[in-house]
Length: 410
Image (cartoon, rainbow, N blue to C red; front, side):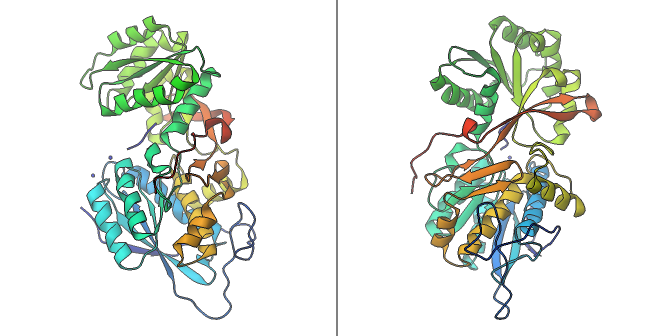
């Protein structure tokens, strides 16, 4: 489920948007885990704090960027109790379109940093995130990456955090469908492309050390007759088949796997993407096991998830796959600003080790490498076509899918 890629519009100052009331807030510096701080209004107005929000407004990832931005605005309202302020400082959100292009994102980020912005958040694209992380370290600003899934952002440097999951957590969630991977045969079905090969490497890196034997069936990206590849998968008699597939041939792939009896003979797992992807599985959806980063309701309708869903809907948006990534980023930024509105070191210290309740459930920022430890989910689809809807099978705790600790690079 790794999601990674295209006119640069004028900057828009989003100001402070309030969508929903949150729970009562505590005085800054005294907030308990998972609780936002209060905005103190005494002593007169204070200068606003600018936060740069970089995401794909346009391009191939625009739908994901929209989800992220809607979640961020709802999260900002929740974490500030509808005030849009922390310690008397209004939060002014300045949005920039990264277009999925690292060069554009870096130019935008440098412009914001040059104007005194000390907090940047966002990007769905891993290539963009990997360019912004060193920029954050060079300029000693706080950077909170968004849905970008690359594991390389974890432990990148002292100033880089993330508000979404990473690839390791995806693969660990997929492996959970066979329990203990030791002695299990796992096959990766993918296209013979950089994306497909990266998924093969990821499965080998995550599940291989746990005792699994990992093989692969790779199809040319141009292939339209996918029956031969489905037959190869069936013949392999794997304990689990992990499918990493992108592009317009996905419906044909799932049809071929169903017709060749693969879906009925072994456990087939793939990542659950956004709502728009549900119909591509056709009648096969109910026979597929899905690892899920998030879908509405996956958090068990906990109070934070409910606040997120209501906030986004009340603003005219639609909650989806990456809505929590934006919401969580806003929670993190507000928590950091409770410590200081200008001292980046104090912001970093406040975030390291912080445990809080997010839309997905209990989460923690690991101090050693800034990995975001979080639940993941197992799901299936009910119905088919336009009526397909995800159904939660199980929640995996943060500990069950936690990536190994990485040395901090800088």
